[in-house]
Amino acid sequence: MKYLSKGSIPNVLILISALFFLFGCSWTKPTAKPAPSAEPTTEQPTREGPSAKPPSKPDTVAPAKPSRPPPSPTPKVTPEPPLRVTKVVWTSVNLREGPGTRHRVIGNVKKGTTLTILEVRGDWLRVQLEDGSEAWVSKLATSEAPQPSPATPPKPTPM
Image (cartoon, rainbow, N blue to C red; front, side):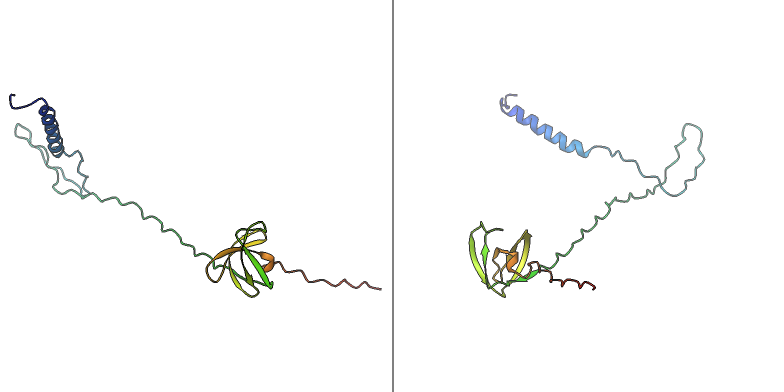
């Protein structure tokens, strides 16, 4: 014990514990039982007496089939519907930061400009311009505006 200092004893114990754990785990006996074979077994006659051996088990063991989880269903990818487009029908219309006249004007477009509709919120459309920028525009200034119903002439009254 004269070669060991006070601080080396815990280190030696840790080393011994680690070695025991590593080698102890590899020396464990398997607990799995062999799977019964599908072949019919025939019993062999046994001898009575001091040298009687137990009947031998067949040497072949059916390999266990690895269990695979069922294949996961592939998610259905639904293609997004094509975006609608609209055209400006007024001579000029303001482009805004948000849906409503209280939002700041960020530009304007002329009649005939094609706009891609990204979102509809009430009477306002969030649109993408041809240059890729986005803004809000009044639905009334576009071809998306509700069309007035044609005036129906009054029915003639019979005389």
